[in-house]
Image (cartoon, rainbow, N blue to C red; front, side):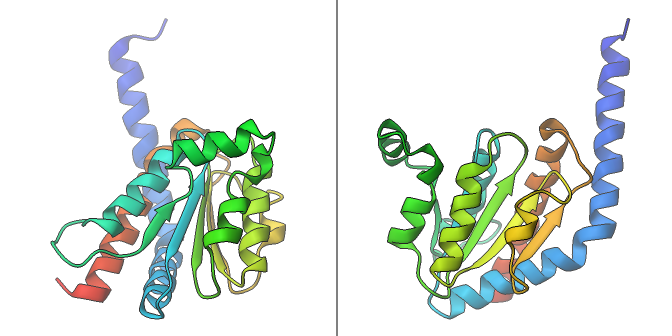
Length: 196
């Protein structure tokens, strides 16, 4: 039987191992993604984000730090979490359009030069696939943070898109890494646009 102390120690050790691996493998890509966000914002574009389940909290976190602040008081930046409006989300689902929960909003709100960020922890992805397709139809670039390697989403990406794919982690293992990554993006965007 696992003791509470050994379970806690294992959780921390596992997280530290995954964090160190992600930092060494994905730092350059994170910097390029931040550049892409900055480029979109400077060109009068915006960030749209979407995710399912608990990963939606991270999409909201990133959009909130851009709209409000991360570490410094500064002007607001345009960022919308498409899963943050429960009324719109439930209305689309009520009409039996779950697969269109994000794509319908992207077709209405997205424009060329905007950027779509998709966070995929695991589970249902058909609405995320349609979101990526809608973003490409609207001439938007796409960024994917995925807990899994070589998914069907990877095949949808264009050469100008970005993907960070972790090594087939469970959602509970991937979520802390995604939180660090969204914090890195917030910090990099804030620094590039406002210094500090």
